[in-house]
Length: 68
Image (cartoon, rainbow, N blue to C red; front, side, top):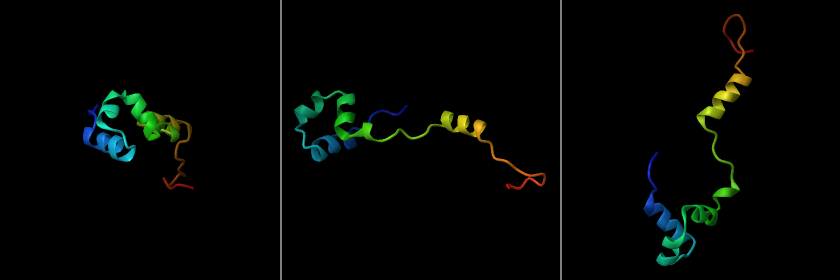
C-alpha cells in the first residue's frame, strides 16, 4: 500500500477547504476524507468483486467460440 500523497492532501485541505495549517494537521485522516466528500460516491470496484461478477455472469460463447 502506498503512503499518503501529502502535497495533494495539503492543497485540498488548505487551498480547497480553506483550512489553516494548524486546523489541517489537527484533523484525522477520516475527518479529512469526510470534509473532502469522499463518502458521497461509491468506492471503485475491486478485483475481487469483478471476479465474483464474472463467476455469476460468465461470457457466453456459441460452438464456434463467438459471442451470441
